[in-house]
Length: 95
Image (cartoon, rainbow, N blue to C red; front, side, top):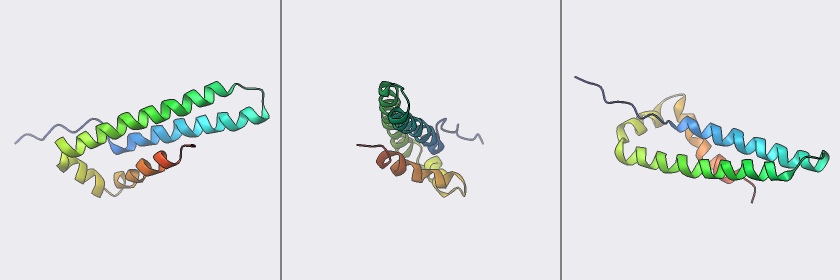
């Protein structure tokens, strides 16, 4: 019996989006206090939004092609908590 190869990208990758968008927001708010360009903040936030779209597409693909692994990840006591990062990082970005 051979085990199925695990899908290389997990739901915990959405924490990367959270960190990049938080850095962009921190840079945006520091532009009000310090003399730093806001272009860097907008670039970071835009990159976080692009990365979210890519990761969300990959996660949907995972549910379509590897539903057993996706369900196992969802019911995992630690990895299951990372699913909440999907809506947090989506609605956490400023509009």
